[in-house]
Length: 205
Image (cartoon, rainbow, N blue to C red; front, side):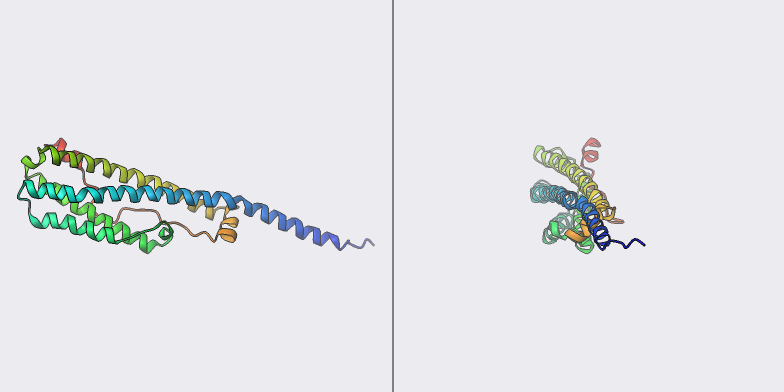
């Protein structure tokens, strides 16, 4: 009768431990890299929205001085902008769906108010023909395009990150080492207006 060596179970345990650590190592570097990429893409989203916020005061001031546009329409844009700037969303908040949703709603309100302003501007051809206003509209159109592109890139990075932390074997390192949580993608609010179609407004003039 062969007596099993007491070293065999120990060796098996060590091999199992090494195998587990090797699998876990798959996510030790790739998961943080994917996370930082998503956060960097989010910074681009914030920069695009900030650019839009910076354009609004000049846009409203030009419209106010050059026409008799309803005061309520202009105030709606300013108030939506003011409310949106109060809703902060840092990169560390991207795993909190409630905070992401609040930020989305605030920005959707700005988009809606801008869309209403552009509809109103259609009634004032003299304003549309002014060089200063046309220049601001061109800048706004470019900014809206940047917003759409940056959101698309951010959502792609979030999808990559979320897939990594849920897929074996990277999920081992993600959970054990990093305590990784899913990030929240940026989605259009149901029923919210789409981004202002500035190009269509001027092409139709």
